[in-house]
Length: 359
Image (cartoon, rainbow, N blue to C red):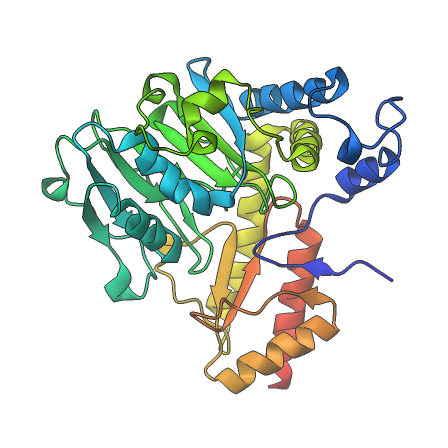
């Protein structure tokens, strides 16, 4: 069966060269006579994989030495609690910018642990834009300021990072992870589930500035304490071995691609192809304010739910799968992560053009 163009928001498609490499090494990794999926995480051969993956993140993202790279589990959702448990321990105050469902979930989780201020929200605009920030609404002595960098459901992203002064900026980067260069020193903490751009589901990467370690509440579960995970090289408990291995292969692939500068150009090209067509279409439209549009998740609709459903059904039959929008917003969503080739977006645009012509 021919491979389809998979526009899933996550788990998402992976580069074919990476899948082929993993298949070649499935039964025998590097002459060890065993699969990565069955080897001990305490073995020397696996420790080499883990350390190489961690160094890969440092190399590709330009992560300074004063940051720790942690491999954890539980998805970004577990970090919604881990962030306040590790950081909301000074003034016990934090600022949150609410730009979508996942930022809202993180905010609700943090309310359990301290005084949390909603510094800005675009909920009244149905999350179709990033809200303007008013520094007068910021908490001066906040332990941190929280954002979700890219909003998978609504197809928005921060066009510029908030200026938070001396307050550490914490960002959920799950759906923009490795899609473009990021100025790591602007952040106190960055974290993300890897199932969009980095690896199969199961791994969460936390990049944390060292001076923010060792602040966890006394009742923080041990496996959620960033300092414990850092001191144990992310192996306090058994790590998600297979996902870490695939992330190593993905990082090697990105290096061969030309790094994150080249990846950004690749992703901008794809996004422009799709947005340009939608903006010129009489049938399809995008609800997001143009300067807030996501480069990874392109949302679009037609004038009726009936037409939306017909489009999704016909697209799937034609080999364009997982285009249905999130159940909370409807419509369509094309997630065009790193591994989506330009040819896939070009083919989708041509299909949309033909669908419109026949409608």
